[in-house]
Image (cartoon, rainbow, N blue to C red; front, side, top):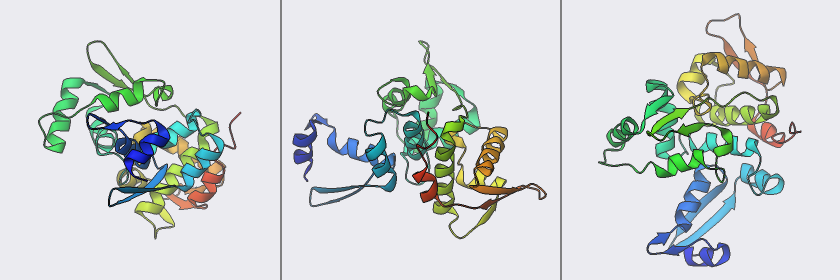
Length: 243
């Protein structure tokens, strides 16, 4: 459909001063919910495998496990949104979880080589209940101090951790059935959107070993990870642990 037809179907405005159809599509792509092609002004959309699972089991994106995967996707290379990737995989690991807005703005301006970066979509994304607010990832004070909090480990979300880890592995190291913990941390950056440190990372891996998703060889240094399942299996179990 054209963006005007999509606007008529969904009620999303697409006027000259309020063109929100195409940004909606792009955010859905960043979150891994849809695939998108556009030709001669016509948009072709289809659900991803993850998007289909969400459509069937959580179509209103109410479950924290859905938000967790969407957040991880939008914050991860290579398919995520540029600002999200920069903040979660580069800036916060370098500067720590507490940062003032002016520092964030200056760093983003340098990264994207532009005088001013619009931080409002990022801030709103994590501070409103309509979006990812339930993840409890960010608080912004009246003095514009941004305080990021790690996403706490929850056993009912183990298949979300498994799915995002295996997807990152399959995308970035597809020929490798075994990798080191250092490669997982330093190359795929899987743990960074979760704001986990190396200890949290190992605890998460041990929980996935209990599920039979992977095996850990702790006799080697660094520890190696052996893949036992593929991401499609973890996706099929995504909602299976919810109470």
